[in-house]
Length: 169
Image 1 (cartoon, one colour):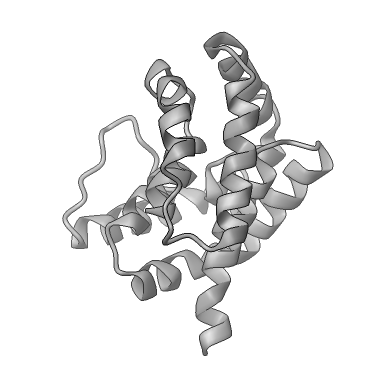
Image 2 (image 1 turned 60 degrees about the vertical axis):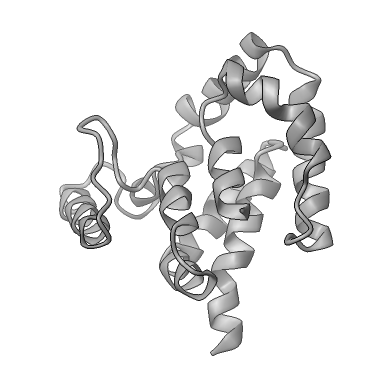
């Protein structure tokens, strides 16, 4: 549940998301640990204080206008370098092995998409999959924290889950 919820919260806000905030807040799953519930409840509180236009403007200002906040994970590794293309192709092929076909306009390294994919895996597999992004998630969360972005704690939750596999090893 956590990955699917974080995918929705880290994606561009739409009317459905905004309408679902009260219900989502009321249904925060017991499968989440208390820290995860607290972080998500705080973010939902932030989101509920905004109308749709404000939420969308804040999202664009956070993620689309600041390259250091990009939710495209390979951007943090390669920038616009030509090596990014093969990394994106490899990730697309990995998804295909699991039966996930991407829309032609989707990049496979978009964090909400990565989280949607992780949500289809069992917890151990999801942690293993996400662990390849640990360093990127740490940098992204740090960049967002520097700007006091309400999205930073959500990215930290993903980073923490990605690190679970390392802690278990």
